[in-house]
Image (tube, rainbow, N blue to C red; front, side, top):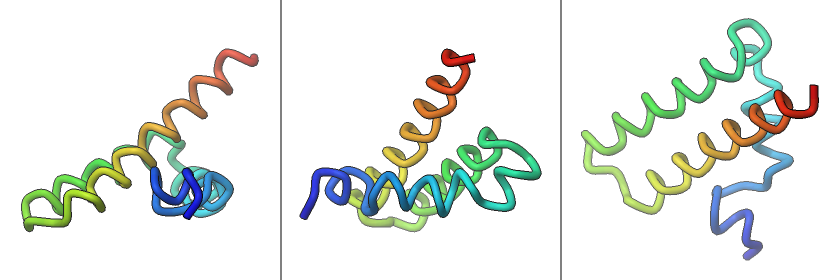
Length: 75
């Protein structure tokens, strides 16, 4: 298992494709994607979701935030 899979549950390319290139990201921005992920995590925690799943989803949200910051700095 790669480090990306251990950290996020998917590759960073998959995160970019599934989340950052999603219709939500295009129409509402990546901030709304992160808010959606965090809302999903809230529900997982409330329903007694597996800590490993919660951790991975939080890492996906942090990855997207880092990508947003990198894009902002490169302008």
